[in-house]
Image (cartoon, rainbow, N blue to C red; front, side, top):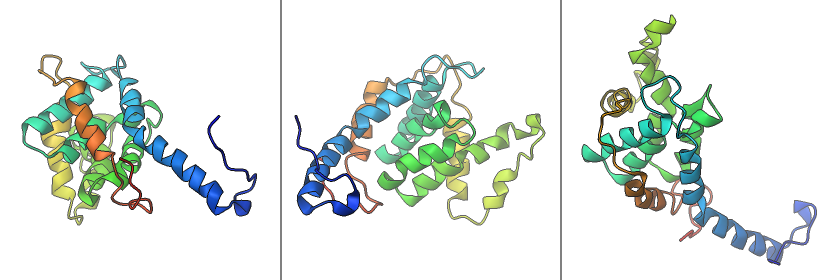
Length: 192
């Protein structure tokens, strides 16, 4: 049996207890890319009424970004931008952004967080909503980057004939991006 802390209330924990917990946390963090890829696979089969399933849409979005020369972090954000669809259908972009935030730049985080509203530019009018809702963020330095993400990679990635790269091509990028937090209180911890 693995070592475990002895306290029943955190205020009674010792340095030794937290060293044990830290070891477990490091191992758990190293396995994060596997859990993320497993969760992404849940999107297989559910089309949500689109011409491709949500998994294929994510692969296609990432493939387009990769083929356009975007860096690994951006491509991973493109791959995972809709991962929240399974358990956060009303705020999927927020869930994906929160998951990515400790590991990506402020700009990439902002793009993922706001892509749902920016994507509305292409269809909100058909739902009786303002297609220009994204303009409430016009003062953001990342407005144009998010508009570009949706225009070039997201809104057009529902093509069943498109030649998507396989998930295996993206796995090393996912592992690289999630290897170490860069924007959190835990960023000094080595998860490699």
